[in-house]
Structures are given as structure tokens and as C-alpha cells.
Length: 153
Image 1 (tube, rainbow, N blue to C red):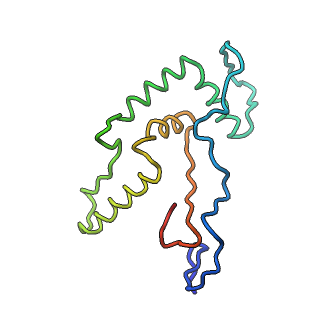
Image 2: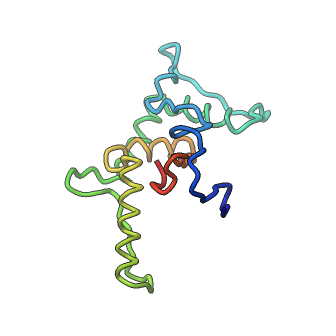
Image 3: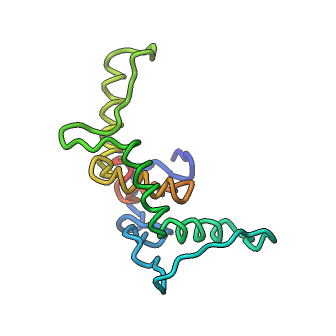
């Protein structure tokens, strides 16, 4: 039995059922962020009240709800992401990579597979906007414990 990164490769089928993730589902539509009144206002944190990164990200999300900030963010996102129904907003360029054509083909197939997992062609505007507002994105790679040879789910 061989072990690599905590996974073992053996012939026994004694693994748990299905795909298991320790991370709870993400609310991607952002419906839990709202302003409670019709008045908008922000303040500068001179005293350093924000102690955690979560507080800062929440503040950025609150600021992005203001109409002026929302318009500015939309301008940036629209300039960064090309909205074309016939073309993908990203592609991989392997022209300067000194490897064989067959390996380049495999890399392109895997790149397309990951893009399809993320539904990047459909959700690229949302993904870029969330990254722009939050300053980062986290993705959790989940592997089916029953069928690890199928790769990332």
C-alpha cells in the first residue's frame, strides 16, 4: 500500500461513501448581505477596530453595496472580463513551453476540465467581481473517496 498526500492507493474498497467536504456550502448569490436603510455612509477606521480579516472583508462587501462603489466596481469588471457568447474569457498559452505536443494537449484538456468545473465561461463576471471586492477567493478541492482516480469533483 502506497501513501501520497494522505491518500492511499490500494485494492480494498473500505473507504467512506460519496464526496465529503469539511467546508459548508457557500452562499454564492450574496443574499445575506444587505443594507437596512436607504441612507449610505461609511467611516474611516482610524483606531484599528478591525481585528480579523473577516471584519475587513465584511466592510469591503458593505462598501460595495453603495451605488457609487457598485458602479465603479462594475466598470472595472466589465473592462477586465470580455462578455462574448462565442469565446471564453481565458485561455492557456503554451507556445513558449518546451514540451511535446501530446503533453500540451493533455494540459489544455485539464485546463478546460477545471474551467468547466468552475463554470467559468458562465460565471466569470461573478467570480472576478467577488475576487475584486474580497481581495481573494478560496476554492476547496474535493475528491470522491470512493473513486479517487476520477480526480477533482
